[in-house]
Structure formats: structure tokens, C-alpha cells
Amino acid sequence: MLIFSCRGALSLALVLALPMEIPHRSVLVISTYAVVFFTLLIQGITLRWFLKRIPSLQASLPSEGGKPSSEEQVAEASV
Image (tube, rainbow, N blue to C red; front, top):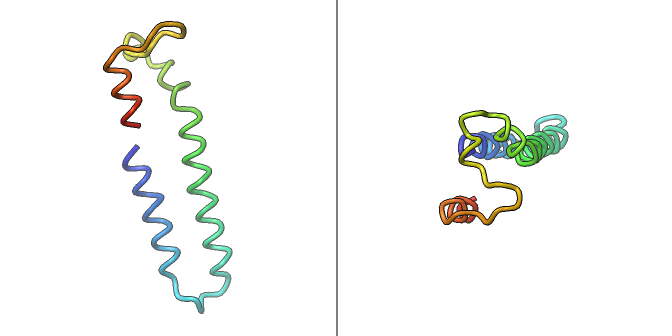
């Protein structure tokens, strides 16, 4: 996920560094914010769905009704 965050930050930094004289700069800034927000939102919503469909990760996912292990609690707190 770190790579995706860096890409969003880099995109925003580049678009905000554009000179004010660029025609339609505001459209570029708004579009960049929208794309970065949309990709972060979609990734956040669909991450658990994708992880449930990877067979090698089935054993490491917490059960629906069970209490999470200490490793799962640490992983959840770090996110």
C-alpha cells in the first residue's frame, strides 16, 4: 500500500507545482485530487474482498465470529 500512497502524493505534488499561468490548472488540480481519492477509496473498500479470494491467505484471515489473535490485533492497529 505504501507504493500507492507515494504515487498519489507524487501526483499531487507535481500538479501543485505547476505554475499558476498554466491554462486550466484548476481543472488539473481537481482532477488529480479526484483520481487519487477515488483510487484510495476503491482500494480500501475492495482489499478484504480480494484477500478472501486468495487461497494461500485463507488460513491467515480472521474468522467472522471468532476473536482475533494477538497477531491480527497488531496488524489491524498498524493499518
